[in-house]
Length: 441
Image 1 (tube, rainbow, N blue to C red):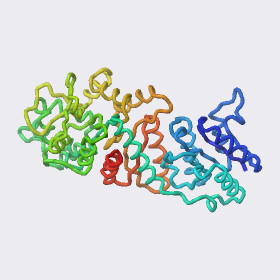
Image 2 (image 1 turned 180 degrees about the horizontal axis):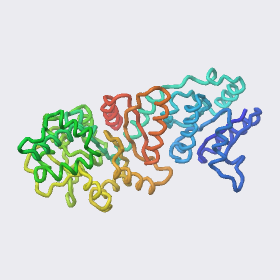
Image 3 (image 1 turned 120 degrees about the vertical axis):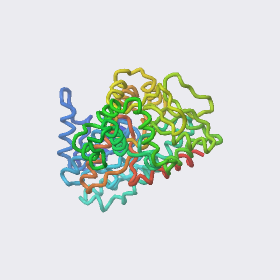
């Protein structure tokens, strides 16, 4: 039987032991050090090895998970399995690192019982041709992965190097309007303003029709709004943000709990938020947690204050709106972020990405400037860096589409230096955040 082994070079002793045992049992083994000669195209040779192999053995370890090349190789194997409707992959865990989520449904062997015992089981199963009957039943990898990431993040929180990065999904549960609903409300205001004589109808049907059939991207719509609402632009946005009097939600409550200083545990380092609202500040104040909202260059925080960086601008619910208030809402504002790489907001994000571990919550990763900053930070880090973390909702299509979607999402996240934490429902996020806080105490 032809067997391809994927492994990190830091795990070479395990790969060599496995190779010797398989070859002694009469199997043909392909490893990058065995059949790749000088002048060979490495990618083509490995892809050919994967395609021709009868079984694909993957050694899962922290070193493997931190290797861009190995994760690319493993995801390519999984994609081939899904596309060909076969199951050739045999994961072998050699430490307690989490299994990539797209391998969750594969049964695996565990070297923690002792490499010799696991290798004997592997050879026995390959000889019988019925590996699924010989391997242990797979554990619920998703659940154990979530628990693993929770403990890792708790260690980082304890060290005082954890930064939360919050997107729109954090505030929506409290009643802050979604992006589309916010645009709808602002478009209504714009139409009323430009049609003072009511010659243009501005009822809900008309606004919806305009939004669906005539409006281009949301950033360009933002530019329309900024141009036509003029001096009322910021005020109208604040009014739309708080129209339903949002207060809090389970995710915000969990963030507040995570932000609360604990004995013998260093506090949360900082929060970066792309939201304009002041819900985090209002709830921190209610819980007597010192904080400082920072939304422009030159602002600083006290030693005991939790800094909350509003990198897209800040519109608190109450109080006068300063004349120099700026928000990133329209196309021109996003262009400014690209043109000014040394703006305070870009520098804050890069600093936290380079110095801390960031946990992304409520973000879709479609913001081009954020992706650029993640890419820049990831390129500067070493190949063995633990990277950052993002919580996302699992795809909910059919099994095959779900599997492919997971692979593509995890490939994208890994390329940006992110470990992807899947949840089946957004309601699981508060529980996960609270588990970090409880594990750190």
